[in-house]
Length: 452
Image (cartoon, rainbow, N blue to C red; front, side):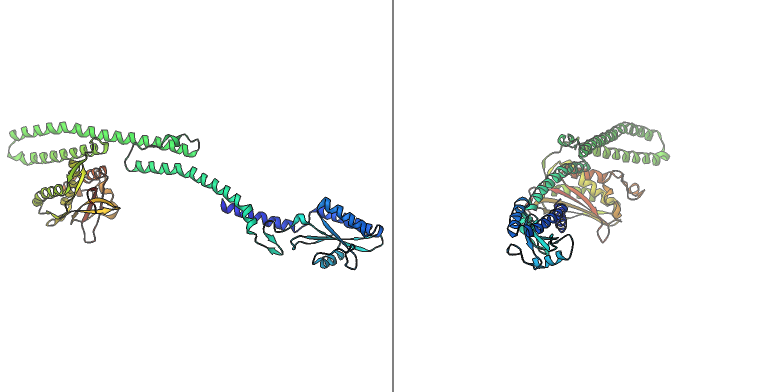
């Protein structure tokens, strides 16, 4: 808007300057009448009458006129403006009006022949078309800061205020929409645009209403999905329990030849039961059924217990778990939820680390933007994860390879449970492939007692 105002102002000045390079038609006509009348009057009534006539013209039109004879002298003896002689010569050789618009006060001249055949030239100063009122003067431009400021500054102030108001009017609701959209993307399905924006009658108001409709639909669909998942998990528990009873009865009646098949049925039933338990846990975390506790947790003791338990189980697979760094750290939250998150990450690392290798677990504290943070780092020495799948491994049921988790005994829920539990504690979880192989998963949790 400022650029447009300046450009418009400059174009107006240039157009005005160009327009003034040509005398208006009414001025040409009037000067022709004045010059012929003065030529007739000088021979009939003398210079005094011409002076009186010119005074009346000046009062009526503002033109200050002079009459020059063939010798270049002003008939009344009045002093002529500088440069008049050249203009008089040009007027004597040409019919019609000639002018000099390069002067601050333009000069116009027109010749007339008296009844005796003498050529007189009327020269008129035109103060009404005085140059420089907007900063122009002479043959070129003369910069006039005061005039420019006086005429342009109000335009800029009004335009600037209007543009600022318009920008705020348009950007404020869009910023509100962006914040609500970000909340929705972070899993806060109850996020909605406020009523102030919805009451607008423009396109932004329509967008806000459509956004709320979309968010309500997403919340309904996700809620239905979670309820369905929870209901299915609960319903599967009953037939599994009956299957366990039937399996016990079958063992009593079957002979040794059937023991292998029955053992396989029992193992698959246990895996299915474990998966259902994980599904229930994930559903409860996603739906917020668990009220988040605010108990003080000795994180160093908790991680040490998890590492010891995982190491005991890993030795059956020719693997181990080492607690390489244990820095005393405390956090606040739900102990069982934090245990589940870290334990799922460690167990996942045990499943995928190479045989004969050790999973390394460390706990440390750091300061991020002046706030204390507890860092739990778990590293395995397996094949790692493709870079394009790093973010996907925290999604439920995601498998990097079609049968990888089936071979290792996982179902793709452990890391998603861990990710949700960490986010509920305002923490972050991420994974990356170190240069020397394997996979590192880092969990950061707020540690208010750490001062840095």
